Image (cartoon, rainbow, N blue to C red; front, side, top):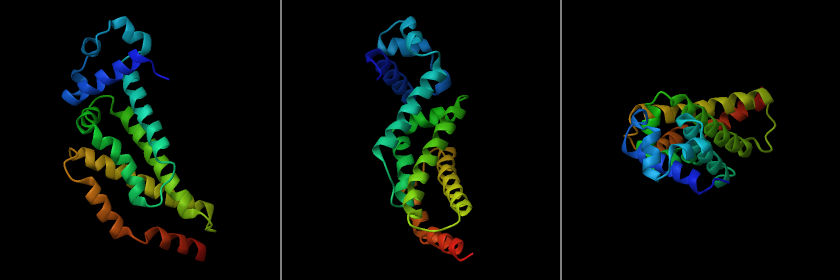
Amino acid sequence: MPNFTQNAIKQAFIKLLEEKPYNEITIKDIVTECGINRNSFYYHFQDMPSLLEEIIKESLDNIIIQYPSFSSLEDCMSATIAFAESYKRAILHIYRSVDRGIFERYLWQACDYAVNKYCENVFLDQHINKEDEIIIFQYYKCECFGQMMAWMENGMKNDIKKDIQRLCVLKQGQVEEMIERSKNQ
């Protein structure tokens, strides 16, 4: 459980990320913002990438707690969008930074979790080939991740929820068709 100082550091960092690019934020900025000394920062975090990783990991853990399962592809993708929308500027600053890989790794994990929970519901009581389950799972995980990456690459300007809703309408019945094809082969 994070203590008061750790939370202050995280909140200061997130606040600064909302204001300016990741590459322009210094540890001095963070400690000044939360009113602590540098040693206190280094007591809790090795460096800025470790701070960033801790915040992102915590956010992923919160998604897992908040969404124990998904009944639709739209719900699944909405979970990965929810966090990003609440910290849009911060996410864009991270996405455009040298430590973007940290964010991408956790986004991949978030998509993996969400699609896995969705597939658990979809494959329930379906007797299909395990290899086909894996292929379908990978397809939707890549779709989810790719949509998020495209949205960020585009500056998060479009209404992704609306786009996802429309995509789900266009793809309606697709997973069921894949399951039926798997059963029939």
